[in-house]
Length: 82
Image (cartoon, rainbow, N blue to C red):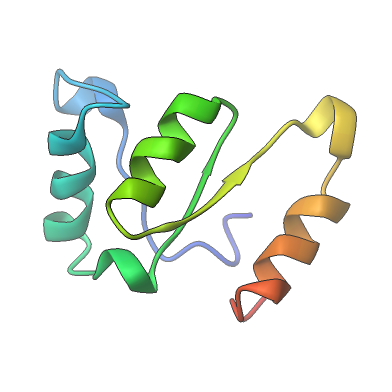
């Protein structure tokens, strides 16, 4: 994934976390991105719900159940170049 991800933030670096909308706003600012141009990957539905409420595309990632195939499919469906 590191080959296709431009940037990311880690919640412990900011002493806050998901699903707090402020955490996502830090991401938008730090990475200089618009929510609608973003693809958010997480294993918790509540975090995906917040990301989608802010305009991001979201994917619930469960490697044990889905492996990489479903993630890669969803990325392609959202026109993410991989």
